Image (cartoon, rainbow, N blue to C red; front, top):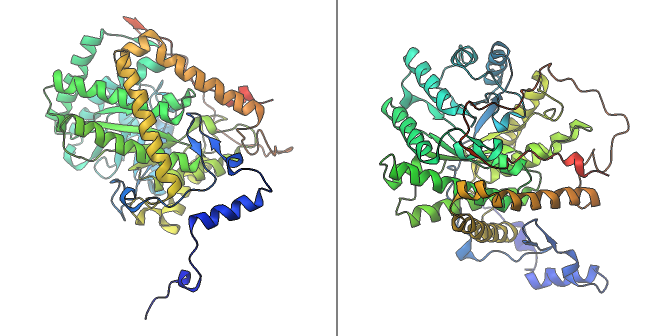
Length: 479
């Protein structure tokens, strides 16, 4: 049966015709009156022409038809209770687990006690070779890498049959907590040594994580998050090639990237696409092959509201959609109650089910880079790439990521973005349904689990300090 395109029944409409129609509705005002701007100053046009065919090639990402990994957080403060949670998550369709030990920036103040027995208890009855396993970056990540490797050995599980990200990110921990326990030179040797140990046991990585979520949680703009991730990745590339003797190809393959996605859907899609383009540019400059980037996305913690928390489901749906369309390899959707405390089974199930709706009913994974060719997304991707690369070069000119942090200049730039975000909440230009607008006068009482957050970590020895980046509370900006 022949297929008929409905568009063939209508006369073609040019971009100029659309533009004229929009201008007619403005009653004499210029089209620029509808132009907005991102925190980085990137213009958001009310109308975009189609992207030229030469600039509309899909960004190489997750293969078409291949579903992303549904990653559930293991962040309970009690290992036995956490085990019950993750087994329920896996039975409910999760295909990956994200192990968040205490003081992992992504744990929201909670997390598992960081010790070997805790890990063993948490993963009891979990088939390590059948899921994607992530360890969230945390201050004792080097130790947890040893614990996890030991667990694979004890269970006689072949490392090559599992998919593991070990979450080694000392730069991110230095930025978040403002303390470094070893000299930078020793830090590089120790990181390279841990990677070599894991490779020697048969693991393929990713071993090291360039994690942007802590920067985003602290108020960084999307471009600042990208630039910080690039600078962190370059720091690890230098360590792995100089200290570990890796080739550029091997060094790139050892590093994964995590980014936050929020309710600004087009910007979040563009950010993930920009990350892959920037990664390819780094590979090109380093003489490495155009190899796959393992990209994890998590819905942004800073957009989660304690007021009328059911409205968080709207925001996490938008963000999860953006992560799927943007090509993330694995996605964590935060439970809608995470701003109130540790999520119970109901909130965790609803987070899982958002994945299933997007995969099984909406089929978001069926097409490779579905936003390719969109005038708006392509323009945002291009401008994010250019601006983030410029910001990355600024960090490099300051001596690299550690030197920039030690001098406090990167934190100062993020503080400016943080304040601009709080000002936007205060003046109403940045709104949150259920919190800053349309508040619910009688919100339902929402249950969370009883758990006490961890106090700030203590470091046995501190050889370097910097101003820590702390999570922003957007409630500060509410009137």
